[in-house]
Length: 350
Image (cartoon, rainbow, N blue to C red; front, side, top):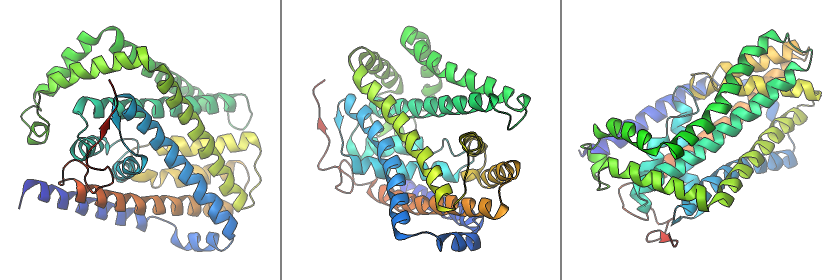
């Protein structure tokens, strides 16, 4: 059996095992009780909200890919993104995990140069994380102005989030202002990977990719500021819909919450998702139950919210597993893969 085939089997066994474990943790009985209260219109509205969130995040990534000169359609990138996020969801800490596979699929199926694939995905993750931390920082700041919880409980969180929000732009400035220093250190790390057969598939030395990545990043900052600004707007708009989805779930359950209560619930859930557990299993449930108890809301409503959130996660997980299968099946067929990307990417000038 070829090494690539063995890797695919191992990946699928691990993904299915973790998916099964994840599904076993879901409150399936409570999900059934919650579903009976949803009308067809609410189902459609909920599906549209989640579809918009996925589309906006993929459109941001597509904008960065096209900015660097690779004209790819939205659908293959959506499948790539969902497959990578499924790997991230099933690994400890749902924020990272599937990015190497996303880069590999982008290079293998669409002949995107390694440095462009890395840069486009890095920019996408940068904007996603920076806006994520900025929104959380704003939420915690609002909580400090309320009397819902003692202020000392949030001061350390506020300090940590503030440091993260400041650190990410500083890293970007370092890459732009001191590229030689950064490339030299990245090159030392990458040198040990240069003999890896996966990297040899894409030709040139890793050090050359770092140099090209730096040049493309500098060009993007000089000439593509409108695309970068559009990526920021898409990130913010995506968070508007994420907040709207949580509001919609509370509306479905007829749970009235004031603005301050909603901010507390949202911040608790998002912080719980940052903890190193696959899919936030256990931590999200604890955050919802703690918040509802603090706000004197019913435990039944808390279980209903958890059930609906986990149903959404299960649906996205199934879609992600199907996307993962599509990506691994197409991975060995060369540029164009399963045909969704055409006979190869059309290049934009420059």
